[in-house]
Amino acid sequence: MSLTRLKDGFRTGIHSLDYEHRKLVGVMEALCDSFDRAGSTREVSELFGALYAEASAHFALEESIMREKKYAFYDAHKADHERLLDQIRHMMEAYEDGMCADCGTSLRACLEAWFAGHVAGADAGLRTLAE
Figure 1 (spheres, rainbow, N blue to C red):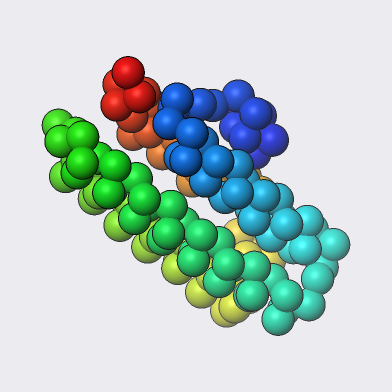
Figure 2: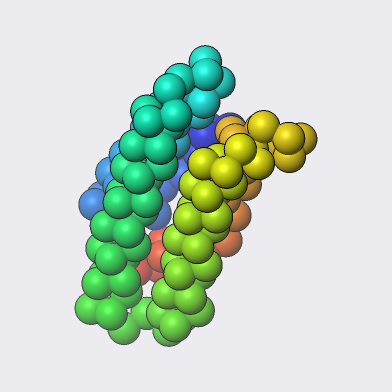
């Protein structure tokens, strides 16, 4: 599943979260485009930083909504957020250490798997909060 398809095809029904998902995909697209065209190390690093900041803010919003609505799976969902932030940090470090060039997987594939796994799995349950 592509980033664009995720942006256009997944909705929780909670407008603020859906908006945030689209913003996250926009940052991921910019990051992948910069990486693919061999943008400067500084540019790619700044975009990784922007992705981390956007993801952190998005997760904080999701967690706030889940607490407010007393979401039954809050603890597991929050743990997934922490794991995902760790993955972004790992990707940032791998890029900065030059490991991305030799890993055999595109950055786009890594980000698609990262986002799709969470959105299709954990975030799918958030649709019940929109009702």
